[in-house]
Amino acid sequence: ALRETHEELGLPLECIHLKGPTNFMVTPFNFVLYPFVGVLDIVSLDHLNPNADEVERVFSVPLDFFLTHEPERHTMTTTFQTDHNFPFAKIQNGKSYNWKTGTYDILFYEYRGNVIWGMTAKIIESFVGLVKAQKNN
Image (tube, rainbow, N blue to C red):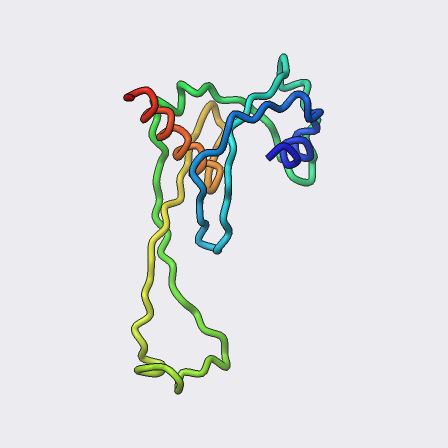
């Protein structure tokens, strides 16, 4: 988390203060993400030097916005697609096999014309859930 933040935002490591991990996430593409919460020791976003190859733009959103606004949800359905030489003869029902499908929510937050979506939105939603649970305890 420190290295990624340093590389993507161009901040010295001593300006990045990790507070701890949040819930890990498994993407539909079999990647496992281990998000961390941290605090940046900066006066303004002008102190950042984002890596243009990895960061399109940087903006801030108050935590209270996420605590009071649910993300917009859209559902994607996943299906299996086999390659051209898949060995159907080796499986029950061959080409008629009943492959399972699944659904995956794609989340969107919109704040002052900025859109946060995909895994970033899922990480935020998970973090907000942890914050709300902590407030209720």
